[in-house]
Amino acid sequence: MRILLPILIASMFLSCSGEPPKEDGRVTLKLYHWMERDRKLWEEEIIKPFEQAHPTIRVVLETSPYSLYVSKSLTSMASGLRVADLMFAEDWFGQELIHRKYGRNLMPYVARDFDTVSFYHDAFREWQGTAQQDDELFGFPVAIGLTVLFYNKDLFDAAGESYPDTSWTYADLLRAGKQLTIDRDGDGNPEQWGLQFDIHYTGLETVVYSLGGRTLNEQGNRAVMTEPATQEAFRFVRDIFRTDRIASNVTTFINPWEPFVSRRAAMNLIGSHGSFNLEGTGIRWDLVVPPKGPGGKRLSRRYSMAFLIPHNSPHPDEAWELLKWIITKSPVQTIDRQYLGLMPVYRPHAESSEWLHSEPRYNRRALVELAQSQSFPLFSPGWQEWRDNNLTPVLQLMIQGKKTVEQFTKDAERRINNVLEWAYR
Figure 1 (cartoon, rainbow, N blue to C red):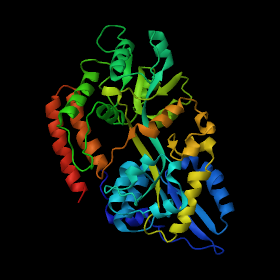
Figure 2 (cartoon, rainbow, N blue to C red):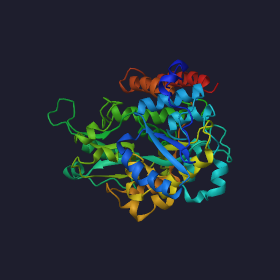
Figure 3 (cartoon, one colour):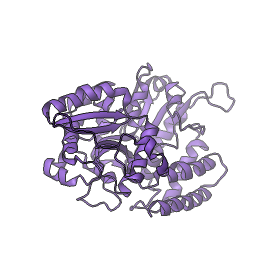
Figure 4 (tube, one colour):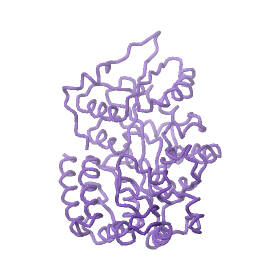
């Protein structure tokens, strides 16, 4: 996890954290996120219409590069200095903000102004905190990503394989993956892999949970890696790389899309917002829901982005009005850009013909299907520390044949629980 930064640097990050002065009697709100590339979209299509409809409110947009944004947010949490009136967070570091009670409880606003059936309500779970109280919501999820199976139509056509569909099981994934793995010169190093499967990302939990395993208990405060079903699921993961050999065990946290984009992998099991990586590539592609596990069980690891109203904002009511506007009034045709390829949680937008048929064109109905009943979150404080810095390195050793499944799960469980004990203090 990105540990709380020393308060000594707070003044560097938060030098402008004081309350903006009122101008002409208007309340000034600071909106803060990391989408600098789409600043014009936010200013022209969202902020300007909002200010016209709310003449007593002025909105100032501030952006930072992503890594600085996360650091600045966590520094604000530690120091208590004000960074914004309305700010974005991803679910992984949002858990730190929730655990430290950084954001206001938005449920009173939600209960007053919304009917929750207008949203994919299950996405609220990861923003309710570990207590999971129905009357608490510390960030409003505006966009979600689902883990899906991307596939290259040209590579499937060349192999004479039918495209993946909703009937696929993980056995079908293995069968097709073997047909699509091609070692043209017979040197043992395929030039084309059936599957790109990067263990740093959400495909891992999608497979493990679909096969009946799990990494954390229901409360999210203890690892349960040594349970038999979890060990069996990770044995399947190992075999993808070592026995069935349909995926390269060379993975990269930096660019998990490179093999698929370069046409060296026919499929990629990864987050749906990756569709943005395929624009302009010339690849004929689509996506489908993940395969089914035993008993027809299908699950997709979900992740989300939400807006928070920090406790130290002096204008929570005005910030909520801005958030309501963003949720319900954002132009549907540009929501993909607005949320970096994620799907809106507001159902009138996500289920509209305008969004379902917007560019880039792909099987967006698969995302709606998953969001309705087949997705699950995985969240806890200390997420990055236990997932990226403790589970993943030991998993890599298992995939390389340097640890057995039993050794891996035992080591990972111990390491994860050490982190969780610290994170939940």
